[in-house]
Length: 275
Image (cartoon, rainbow, N blue to C red; front, side, top):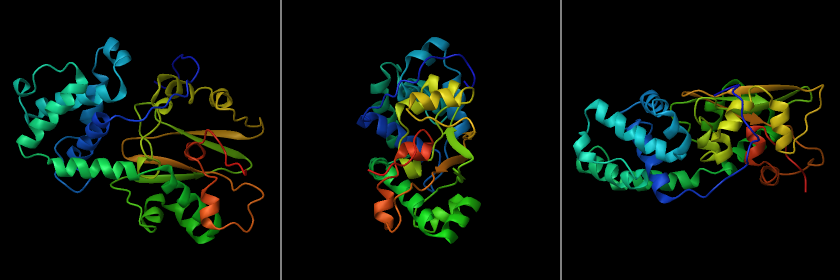
């Protein structure tokens, strides 16, 4: 979607329903990201989302697309039969049928799904803020973080399963921002589920073409003499922005520093502010 014409980025967010969390959790388990057997791949999942008719692609919600793609992929793989699933619509109810069939066939367990849903609840931006605050205080950790984000985060006990995490540092000369023009790749292990606007057509299309204008819609004005670098995530690589430490925080401990680091700062659509 990068570069296509689109309107203003509507900064919408919503609290995810349980069926949305469950289809997310089921896919994480089906992809083998928790050390289990990989039954489907992220690429297959993406392919079947992109194969939706244009009208459905535009009208279905984010996780309705996930339900449809998961069902299609499982049938294509021969793991389930189409007649076992029945009619796909309404897709919110199809999530329950998928779960029932996958558990019945022994591919997943309700306990594993519930455990992953709870783990999702624990993945909040506070995890990423802790990483940023540590980097502000510890020069050696910061050096390691910029060299290998995955290893540095794991040294803090933060699991980064099967992904390359690239941390990009804001400086007085460069401001970084992240996007995923293909779907919604995002450092979820540190920031939680991405907000609706991050997944929106407008953000994905315009951020790579006119980032300064999009940032202005987030009330972030970047001086013309500061370069903006936009980083497009991939299926196996995620980016995290390391914002500049704000003035007036000398002598602060890690907890207090982390309190001024928001999710949007680590996406790059905001900067830390001292109250």
